[in-house]
Length: 370
Image 1 (spheres, rainbow, N blue to C red):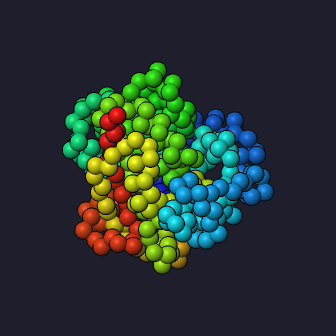
Image 2: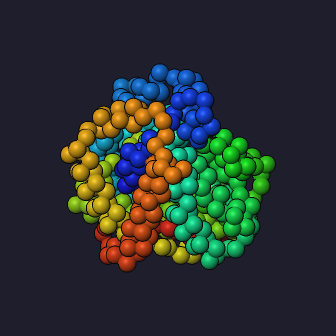
Image 3: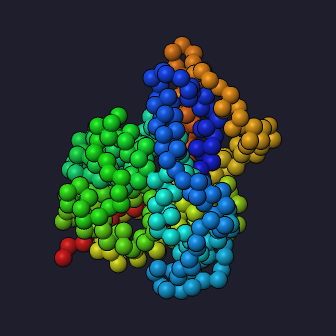
């Protein structure tokens, strides 16, 4: 969801953990791994993130659902453009970077959300993951579960506690390493394929805010279908920007281009499931408007007090953990803020008006027989 980016920026203001030295804090371990990884990243890729049009070959595409080549530009950000298909309402990035360039973006840790931010927020995100796991358990109580785009592994951690046999895929080697070494969960760093996990099939495949990153959603969903057991379930969360009236676009602080390649309407998701061998089971809808309004107010308040550059300098100036009575204040702040976003989105958002407004959609589908 695009609003997540600003949630992470707010959380980063709370983060004053030690990032240098020889201590054993998670921040030290993450910083050391990040430093080693960044030394291997190319200067060309850094240029890609700061000036994309000057360093990356872009290619135009058509709507993957109906073949329409739209000229209706609805989003412009960081030199990129998103077009909306007038036939099916899909919003897609065009022109866009090539598949190898997009994969480098994620593998290098230079996507919109860093691996460090994901790992630091591991425990505070668990309230969201528990909510999703409760829904998953309405349809399947136990079995083998694969998460695509596992991030820091917080959902896998909760699912394993809930009785599932879990595995993950994440293209970022810092996060994948964290899942393997710190959580003891099998995690691969390559896109899903016939050879992933030795050809194993799963009872459930789950992903959250990942479908917008798929280079070819139709092809990826076919792969997912192939890796599911008969009657296996696909559960995923994404937004509905294709259904949203443009007056609500101003609520989003960023759309995270070129990380996000597609923004779907609900009918796009239904068509995607139909084309790739799934039958729709259930959809859970949560209005994002209350959370987006609060985020916008917080953004304005912060911008009035300190610039973005000064915030970064403030974070870097801290060299020791800020603790009180043995608890990190940043840890407490992250937990409080994530619980607040959980209440706004999944409790208040579930009863708010939704038609034509930004929503988070949690979709449940089953592999079609035959």
